[in-house]
Image (cartoon, rainbow, N blue to C red; front, top):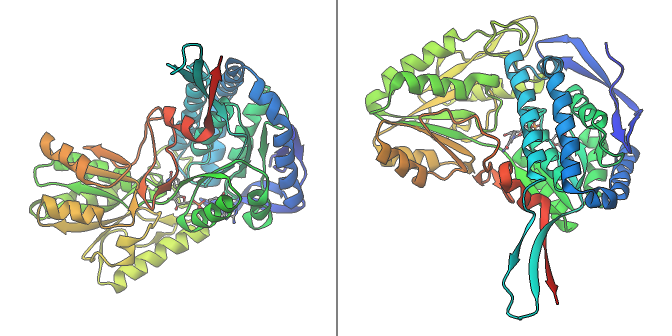
Length: 476
Ligand code: NAD
């Protein structure tokens, strides 16, 4: 058992008041780490330290900030196997997924290190002969970053790396389920020489530290998580005048048209629905299929669902690990009970799997449900795909858009014209043609429409919009 995990405030690891257990969802009797949880006083200190560190960090030349990010990337890369293993042990995704996610965080750090060498403003012609007119991007100040457990290092990386690269200080509250990954990520910054206070990390229960963090003097709040929590925090932050960015839930459709390559479609839908046990905001959960190919598509999808090996995330043969917590298992099982009550049938899976007492859910394919069933309308966040028949292209698009969410959408077709029309017709922030709805590249904008997001986009150069603000200068 490693040393108890602690918060990181003003460049020091801080003891906490309560002790929490970080358990392995594949074998809940195994305690991965103990956490000395922060209280409100530690949360307040983290903000105070960030405020104190801000002027010097803002004035540090951007390329020097980039150098620190680059060093953090190198350290994290050297530790990727160890970090990935711990991530898999506390979150439940497979070792390959966890190491891949850690390497993604490395790439994100390098990308934003590179951005510190890019132009930070532009010059304009002035109406006056003697005026030199320019505008440049400056950091917003102290940013509060609140992150979920499902991508415990990639999501923090795509918030922290741009925030720091552009000269902000950050107070980060990781999700309670994944404190060990958070400590690994923090260590990479600390060991890379990030000055004290520039990054504060508060490991604690949201019920103990959330209100203090939200009430604190921060200029911006970037949040990824559930709609319920995000909306509440948005109201509090806006009331205090802070800038807010939310990345929330999804209910992502995959539309399979009659001319699609069905082998490809079934494989990509299965990946989108079942990898990471379906716990991705961009996971495929509604499979809208033209009637002519409903049966052959369903057969292929069921074959994938039944054939994918469920098991310990550290076993290299495992394709799908457990859900992240007992609460997640209960939630997903509840949706499946509801589906049965609504007259649905499980063509594959349909309930938990008994393996080592872990929180396993079988990859599940549902059929026979109407658009009003909760499992079709609400975000399930588990390995569950609901098949919905469509009578035509227009019917399929209507079904795809029949949701309050608008994060990601996929279409499978060999007709390029149809594919491009779908990309225009569907209301989603990300559209994939002949690819699963999940899976993102790091240098392009990411975010959703409708209830899936609020505020400007994350990732790539788009992140600059949130983490900086314009200053316009007239020089005579
Ligand atoms: P959650 O909303 O329960 O928690 C998210 C974070 O908010 C956690 O760190 C949690 O501790 C914190 N939090 C909760 N209450 C708080 C409070 N009162 N004050 C301050 N902080 C508080 O979400 P989750 O269960 O961790 O993650 C799953 C959700 O995240 C899903 O809905 C999923 O769709 C969403 N998600 C969205 C994206 C995206 O980019 N759109 C990406 C990944 C996950």
